[in-house]
Length: 279
Image 1 (cartoon, rainbow, N blue to C red):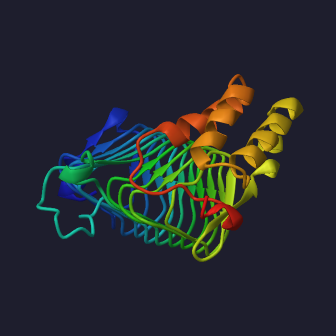
Image 2 (image 1 turned 135 degrees about the vertical axis):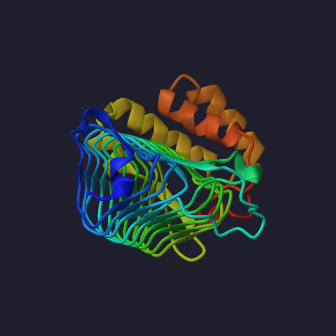
């Protein structure tokens, strides 16, 4: 064991650190943590219990990683954000429990202009080559497929799936249970349960497969479909259709989540079907 490794904080001394790994003094390793060959862990890093870093993983900056997280080779977590306004402020990366972070993933910390934290929830799968930029907020059970790219300040709700090589513009919000098609360029907010695809991405319906897989009741899904057709129809203005949906389906929890998402403060326009973009 190196002198640096000896001065790292290791809960119960049950963590395993390969002799070739570089663990800086001050780094905190939870019980059962395994740090593989040629990994580098900086001083302000905290690894939760039973975290696994396979090999050639670099965790830098002020980064907190939850229990049972597994990180694969050549992932880089916590390095300075790719933002010219960043001035070295002590921002953070916070990753929840049981996430899997695959090869060549990059995750950058927050900035002063975005709340100082980039956060990833529990049970997320971030596949090879994906990029999570500064100040992103990712919910639980989110999947980012290979080479998915998030610009800064992106917010993603629980259970959303972003297809391979999709790109999400800065400040875009993606609602819970949404599905983003592969190679889509998303520059507008995506409603919860929505499916979008294309360049530039347009709303292409509801994520019915995801709704059924997650056990939502058939009647609630049918009402959500009716509300969707009403909301993105061609009659009246969007605000008029929004009021109609609120009056008719306001008691439906799924519809209520969509309405709440639309009502919330946003920096981007709302992604709509092709036929409804002028509405």
